[in-house]
Amino acid sequence: MTRLLMKGNEAIGEAAVRAGCRYFFGYPITPQSELTHYLARRLPEVGGLYLQAESEVASINMVYGAAGAGARVMTASSGPGISLMQEGLSFMAGAELPCVVVNLMRGGPGLGNIGPSQADYAQATKGGGHGDYHMIVLAPNSVQEIMDHTRRAFDLADQYRNPVMVMADGIMAQMMEPVELEEDIKIELPAKPWAATGTAYHEGRNVINSCFVIPEEMEVVNLRLEKKYQKMRQSEQLCDGYFLEDAEIVLVAFGTASRLCRSVVDKARQRGIPAGLIRPITLWPFPYDFIGEIAGKFKCMLAVEMNMGQMQEDVQLAVKGRIPVYHYGRLGGMVPVARDILEEVIKLYSGGADR
Image (cartoon, rainbow, N blue to C red; front, top):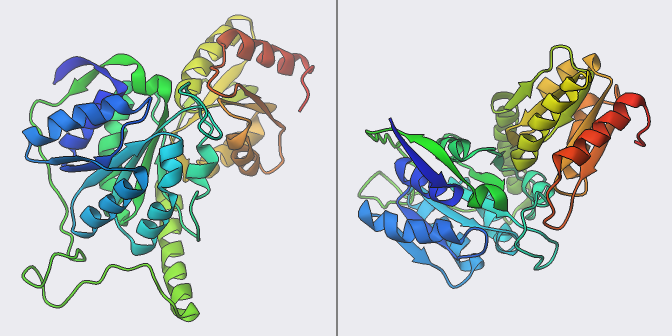
């Protein structure tokens, strides 16, 4: 293993290369730009292709073409760029094409700003494009996890023939931490007999399509996709717990907010407050099962987010009304402060907080 100091954006790029990604189509946007810069240099070194598209609309459609030919392919953006990709993502989900999309979130709505945010949660987890579709959404909380989950995202995309999103905020894109890299890279790519590679590679023609004009045929496709999504729900829920054994108040947070909340739990326990933390790692499928199984042990939960409470709704669904779920958040590129979160925890423990 080699230990290096890497920026989050660089770790994503290197992880993609080590996962066998050889094609990137995208457009620079703060706070994602270092990722495109890294891949513009790195991909040609391994025989890959970096192409800066004229827009995010163009880039996601280029991803569609490369994925349809069986390549491991990625794009990345932030805020407004991810919004422009929504039609293409729906097309790819409907055509069952694997790809990895990275969203390094910034403040919004609208053009917003370049501050870190988690305001794209609902867009990613509820399907920002049209139609009944889902993407697996992974939420790392360190540069090492950014690398690990980016590599995992390519495997999940191929396994389910579906777009997978790696979602972090601008802080994680820009911060630097040590990461461990394997010395020998072993890339084993799965066979893709469904790809549009021509009759020289297989008998007959493969047609990749998401347009089904006859309603009965479209319904059959939707039902088949729903079976796949159900399998994802059953197999891919992932989260992490901290001090849950004796906790009475449990914080729920992902990404940068979860790092702050871990510190808050430690400070709360120093004051004699039995706090704990649940960190969803898959935002879709959300870890409903884990939270639902243990929710009855606690007095309440506090969803801590860098948005207006988008994840809070999923936590409420998970607990099924058995305990109250509160929310604390900062907006527009503002980052919660551990001291303020701790004050909220103290209020809840003393019974002085509003739901």
